[in-house]
Amino acid sequence: MQPLLPSAHDDCWPRQQLPPIEQWPVFHLAPFYDYPANLNVAAELLDAAIAEDFGTHVALIARGDDGRYRETTYAELAALVDSIAHVLRQDLLLVPGNRVLLRGYNGLWMAAAWLATVKAGCVAVTTMPLLRAKELRTIIERAQCAAALCDVRLADELFTAVQLSSQECAVRTWGSAAPDSLETLCAVHTQPFAAHATSVDDVCLIAFTSGTTGDPKGCMHFHRDVMVMCHGFSRQVLATSHADRCIGTPPLAFTFGLGGLLCFPLAARATAVLLEKCTPETLLEAVAATRATVSFTAPTFYRQMALALQREPTRFDTSSLRACVSAGEALPDATRSLWRHQAGVELLDGIGATELIHIFIAAAGADVRCGAIGRAVPGYEIAILDDALRPLPSGTVGRLAVRGPTGCRYLNDARQQDYVQRGWNLTGDAASMDDDGYVYFKARTDDLIISSGHNIGAPEVESAVLTHHDVLECAVIGVPDEDRGQAVKAFVVLREGATASPALAKALQDHVKATIAPYKYPRVVEFVSSLPKTDTGKLQRFRLKEEQ
Image (cartoon, rainbow, N blue to C red):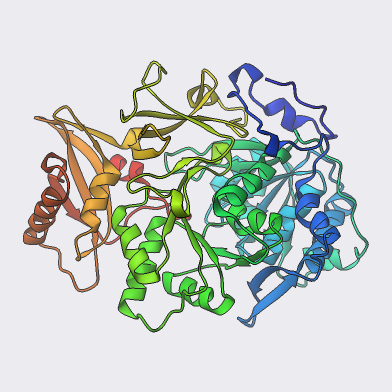
């Protein structure tokens, strides 16, 4: 483990909150992830783009108040970012290393606020729009945020959180003409802002996990880590270029969205299409209206979009799409097939984690192999280990372990020692790997159902249920069973027009028996109107387990 380079932060708190270095994973830095000692991500994404003559190229597309799409060039975005950075440093008197909480929908101001925070040498603490005061208070106190920038429409919960918090936190909002609004403050700062010369090893982002397994954890990422995700998955697998327009649903507060919908396009001098809120239909309309080329969303959203295309095949135009990235949840084969058939584009599956900032296993184009997620993104090393952390033979299901240029560094959290063991990041996934390095996902380790001695992966059963024509969504968990230890239970959301009944439950069970090994069929079927999900579209199976 190489020692960290000296910090350029005046506020040394972020460095002090990193876990002890002996609890860090092993890091491998391939030559293509070699960066100078001083690196500021915002300067690389914006200032360098302008120096390369991309100033007049469209950086962002977002809807204005009138509902029309508005284009913002790299030069225009840089000017706004510089104004906000001046507000942070001159008006709010922040110093490099201070934490700034960011709260807003995907759009121009949220993107500019993130870039300005980083450019000023501060640390961005991104939060999901759906969080409430209690959750925001916890984040403010855990990250000791000195300031917050927030969409005025989301400000009430934030102001309540600040009032309840023991941490002093100055709040400025955008979206109004108030005397202290961000727009008003920015209007007087028209001069350029020189990016703070942060160290490549300085923290620039604290990203809290999305809460699929309960209490979220703060993941601390360096300036280096953000550039790694741009030069790793985006460049070497997705092959993002300046001709691309990237669109999707994940919030910029989620590293899946931060990468795919902001950092990836800017690093490639491409265009980000930022949408505040989407339904499957409105996302499809936006793809057509903006001629988007790359989409990022969760499997459940791709399935709903495919069904919309199936219902109204002439309404939506998806011909501009060249790549569609699915992540955040296991991709069922039924969804992959349905999307390919309806949209004419192969889904690019990936495994990533907030702890490692973005996708580290994927495959695209000719590298796609049936049933596999993909191989390690260049620079990463993958292993399948047993419970004693010994390598398992090819084809054997075990614990997915990864190490490479990024890795887990929790914000002052005892769970660091659970996620990182013997230098490996243990992602909590059960998987196997073949002789060619292709990874086959089985389930989250806590979603493995052990029934009568058989290991059954919840996603495999869900995928089988989803191939039935009456099923819209499905979630599978294990429930206590006196005879088997656990029994497979399926929660099923039906398509419009289908009616729940014991006969349909039996039909679904028979369908699964005919699709996969019969012992995996759901012995209990419960019809529900909806499934619990995070605001990034990921299933929260733990909530279903709690209810049982």
